[in-house]
Length: 414
Image (tube, rainbow, N blue to C red; front, top):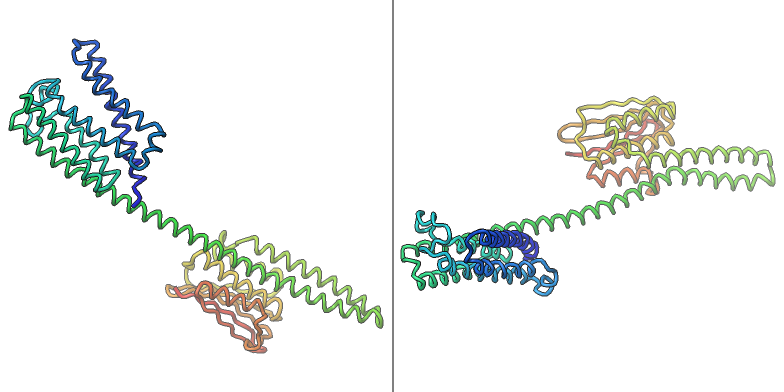
């Protein structure tokens, strides 16, 4: 498990703790300077190694040389210094192992220890944070070792009595429990962070896949649009040019009429190409929703072709994703284009129906109709509608009979 992030966080906190200790040492020297003095050397002994630790903790050179053991070295030295402070406190300040605060002697025995002993909890806990349960174990053992060293020095100096040994037991328990709890919480946080990072990477890969799929769909969509516009017009122009070539030698008048017809075909093809490009650029579903986009398309189709178009909705607003709504819109658009080009219809009906189980869109005309089984695989309009329906898991049905019109229905089950 990667613990680099936790070590960086623990190192930042340790630097703050170190800065606070240096400030305490500086304030102690100032008080000694304006007071009676006599303990300056002890404050210098407290301050000097911490200044060195501050350099080791902040200079990049040490971090590069020590690597992942940078924090471990700092915390180990900090525990040693804390143990020395704990051992020297009764010698320097006197009293029954109570440190410089005489009021603490009136508290319970479990609290009658030098404050320096409790400060050992900080590096022991940070060891658990940065290095997990192993760090908590090593940090707690080191802290316990130096507290016991403090007990030995205090007893040897005659300033500790057995009743205060209860405080040692409390400290040892805290050195065992608190770093372990912190290490467990830190490991849990690391696992959650790694899971989040893994989920983020999967999401990025999924987004890249979706993007590539969208690009592929747009290419297919563009291919269908070009086939149904420019390809038809250019094919007709090519056939007419062959006719002009044959007519020039035998019937110049007919050739001139064919050339005029070619001009009309070229203009019609240009208009269709412009319409297709405009349709590719604009996404009316995003701005108006599926119902509004279908209604607007029906109005535009009626104005452009002169055919009567009825638009009908059944149910409420469809509960669709943006991609599903866009697919249904494009299927309806392709069905209307087929009506315009081939059906020779007089009336068209568009129906959008939605229920809790399904959403369906149908386009029905009263045109000449055809036999669906005779439609070849090269008819890109119908093939494109089937492809779009398949991409979103919908079912597309095409019903038509000669002289009975055509109905295209796309049903998406919820």
